[in-house]
Length: 421
Image 1 (cartoon, helix red, strand yellow):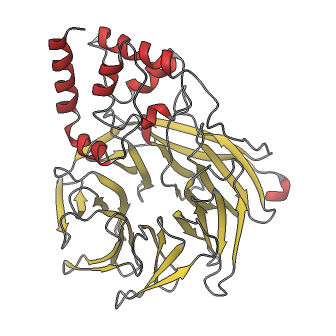
Image 2 (cartoon, one colour; image 1 turned 30 degrees about the horizontal axis):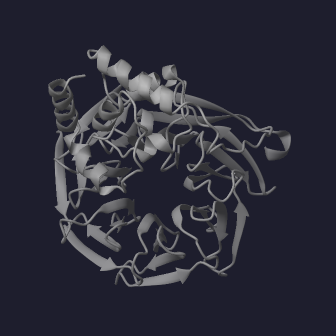
């Protein structure tokens, strides 16, 4: 490839991925890529969207699987020479490996995966949530969009959001309206699919990063800011916003849930703590977690009021009783570096994934038996995605996703054993 063509390709890659470039630049730099033909092109095309670390720490793929995976991110079908150069380089330097191998746990519980591929390439579909009408809303963070999937037809319609929103999540308010967090431009927003209108609420600090959202039963919206170390509240009726700091620096407020008494709780992804928020005054109380190195990406409140959380920093599943203060943890099957991430409660079991291994494993922990079972989450013919949030459906299914391959997935229990029924 001569210098002129190479320069043009790099420019095209950067321009076409411009909404994503700033995010990639904010991530930690990777070690140098291996030398060889195709290195410059891979660094330009792939690096326009994400850091090379995601390639270097992958489980590696065959050439056919690299083609499958990259086709979910960018369409190079009209540039076959460029595509072949990229695929040859990736296949030669990053073949299949077992550096991050998962540990699968067999069992008798059976499930079915139903996958849908979302239309826009490279969007990083995430956080699917079921609407009362049965449709499924999702956020396309890198695509700067919200989408609505009809699971009956498999068709999805996608809506572009205001520039640089980069929605981290989508949730539904008590009337079923979709809301999103503008993770890049310091906003939260309400979207009206009937009119296409977006109502934007700007944060006091436009550089802050709204992250995860939760409505209480009165319609008040509470949300976290991971990098900004903040917690916020919005009254949609008045537009009033109040933002407060976490008690300790670098707590990285992450997941948000409202308990049965109407109290918001927030997990800490940077320190061993949980945060309890007074919904009226916004006073924040820090609850210390007992094990050093604990970080909590996400948690869920079971019907009995018990908190279940993923201890991402230690590779464990945890239980916390907010009434008694009792803690208990179990080692996740794939070990301390498994980095559990999304979590949900369904039918007497806790479901979560191990994002630090490949394949990304879906784990079921049966509470009564304190037993594990796990399955690899596929992304078509490859195992490449990451599940970052999980939600349940009214029919007893589990909605998950695979960000790297733009997939929304429904997990349906197929058969329960007699003892589990």
